Length: 140
Image (spheres, rainbow, N blue to C red):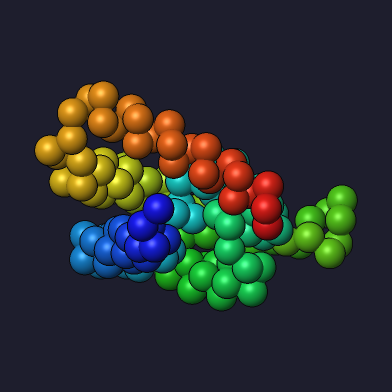
């Protein structure tokens, strides 16, 4: 097996973030903040810990990114009434209005990245990456 697989996966991830940076700058979002918007809009009241699990990032990174998103008017954070240790995150109207732009950037990235792959190649790649992602989640 080639030794560059993980480097290639990492390169794709970082290039995707740079692409999001460039295409969402006018919205006031960074490439690393963009993944938070669909998650928060889909699950208003999600806790910071749940976001960390869903996005596979450290809780401290979630706290930092949410502080910036809150400062820029995308989210509201509230202490949970049922568990005072937990912080719930809610999308603002600005986040809801930005969601379609975020989705469009994700769609555009996928189209550009996969433009010369056949349907069969895409399906096979997706299947293999899903298996690897599940295994990675089990390992951590």
